[in-house]
Image (cartoon, rainbow, N blue to C red; front, side, top):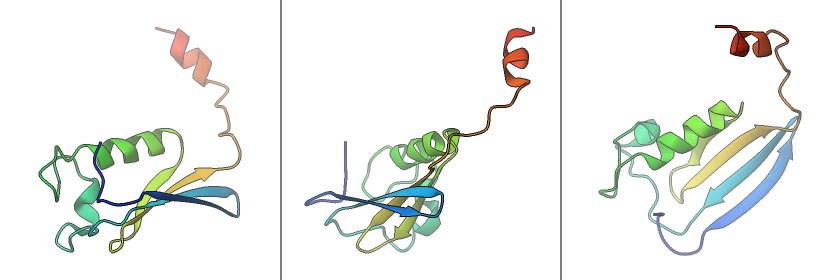
Length: 99
């Protein structure tokens, strides 16, 4: 719902076995005092809830990827996803159905 300002740009690239989606905007960037804490819940530089980036990172990790801040000013965030499907655990289905 909220971003830094101006135009939002997306760029994709392939690096080895990963697809990287980079997102940037024309806003002021991430304040230096927030640094890597920007992904912690309740951390916000703009009086918002501070939940958006935390949830986005959790969702990326749940899918086997990762979300990183690549650059603070101008802000660039990278979503790294594997190009191959994750290996299925043969015992996973058994664990889900056995109670």
